[in-house]
Image 1 (tube, rainbow, N blue to C red):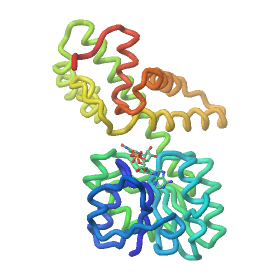
Image 2 (cartoon, rainbow, N blue to C red):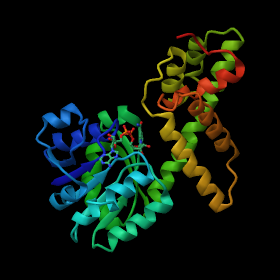
Image 3 (cartoon, protein in one colour):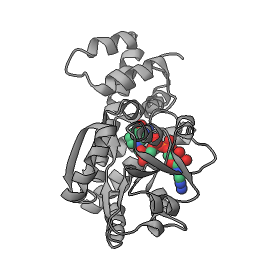
Length: 294
Ligand code: NAD
C-alpha cells in the first residue's frame, strides 16, 4: 500500500519503519531532522502534507498535540487539500476527543474515512510492534485499517465511534499518571525511612503492589534514568485533556488533578522534557529527600 506518515518522532519513526519493513511504500514530509533509518529506506520525501495525501491511500499522523494535528490536516498545504474520495486518515497521536469528532466530520465530508487510533506502550512497544491501539471510527474503516495496525501493535481494540479511541487513551493516561505518583510516594517513603529503595521495589514486584509502572518507572526512579521515554510535557497535555473533559462532563477527578499539579511542579523546575517517571522529583522537592542518588 501507499502510506503517508507524518510525525516521525520518538514513536512515529519506529512505527513507520514497521510499515516500511512489511513492504509498504511510505511517503513523509521532509523536515530538518529526519530519522536516519527512514532516510536510508526507500521511503519518499514530500514537500507538504498535501503532496503526501495526493500520493498515499492511507495517511497516518503521529504528532504531539491537538493544534499540531489540526495544522497538519487543515493548515496551508495540509493533508485535507490533497485528499480525494476513498482515502483514509488515521490519527495515532494522543489528542482531544472533542476536537477529534470535529476533524472526523470534516474529513468524512471529503468522502474519506477517519480513524482515531492512539497508542500505549511507549517507544519500547513501538520498536517491538507490540503497541496497544485503541480505535474510534466506523466498523468498515477499522476492518480496512486493521492489517496496518497489526504491523504496529498487538492489543488492538475497536472501542466505538470517532473520539472513543481518544477517550480510551485519556483514561489510560489517568491510570498511568496515578500509578507513577503512587510508586514515587512509596519509594520516597521507603527511602526516607532508611530502606534501600531498590530492594523495596524488588520485594514489591512479587505482590499485589506489582505493576508495569513499578517495574519500569520504579527502576528509573531508583537508577535516576530520566531521559525520555515519554516526556512530562506530553503527559501534562494528556491530563489537561482529562481535566478539561471532566469539567465538561461534571465529573470530579481529584487524584488526576493532584498528579497534574505534580507535573506542573516539574515543568516549573525545567523538567518538562524529562521522562514522566521524573514526577518523583516533585515529591522529592517537597520532602527535601531523594529516593536515590544519581
Ligand atoms: P515527538 O515529539 O518525539 O514526535 C513528534 C514528531 O512530530 C516530531 O518528529 C516532530 O518533528 C513532528 N512534527 C511536529 N509538527 C510537525 C509538522 N507540522 N509536520 C511534520 N512533522 C511534525 O513525540 P512522540 O513521543 O513521538 O509522541 C507523539 C504522540 O504520541 C503524542 O501525542 C504523544 O502523547 C503520543 N504517545 C507518545 C508515547 C511515548 O512514549 N513517547 C506513547 C504513547 C503515545
